[in-house]
Length: 208
Image (cartoon, rainbow, N blue to C red; front, top):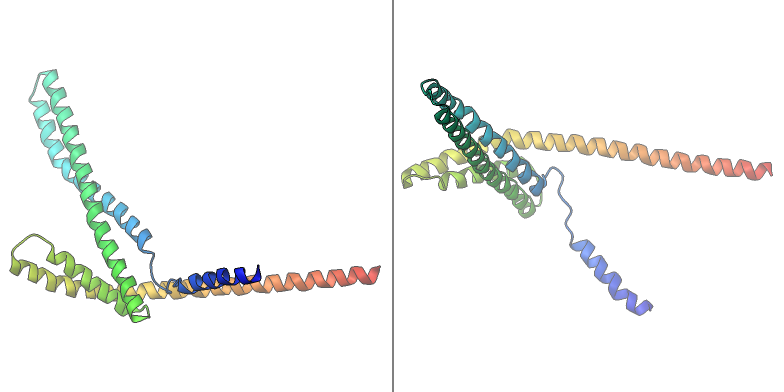
């Protein structure tokens, strides 16, 4: 039995050693993508809903100039259906766009951190520049327009990525300091409770 247990222990050690822990300061790719999708849906839907106000005013003018009740009902129903379709389409398009952008941005951050072996501001700057350049390249337009978008996107992505990366690393450092302080306090409490229990047992034995 001892011989058969050794291969299992070796395989468990290999699997544990192969698991790479998440580097400090990196963001969970899946969580960030889901947040980006919902934020894009909210932004796209609210944008289309605010844009529908002018069209609703036109429908109200038509209702005022239409004496027929059936025609008024039809105009109201068509306006509500078109508004629902516009808001739904805006939510879907906004969620897909921002979700793809967020997934690409944080995916490149994780890739750069894995390849370089460290997570710093330059990973965020490179990910922002590359993501903005990619989305500038896939935008519709002529070749010269896309080249211009790539250049502008890379510069803007790097410019926004530097303060974002600095803020992200500072927040990660603060969170790590707070967690380490809480862990040390918990260890002290455990050690104190253990010493107290030992003293109580000693007093009980002496009392007997």
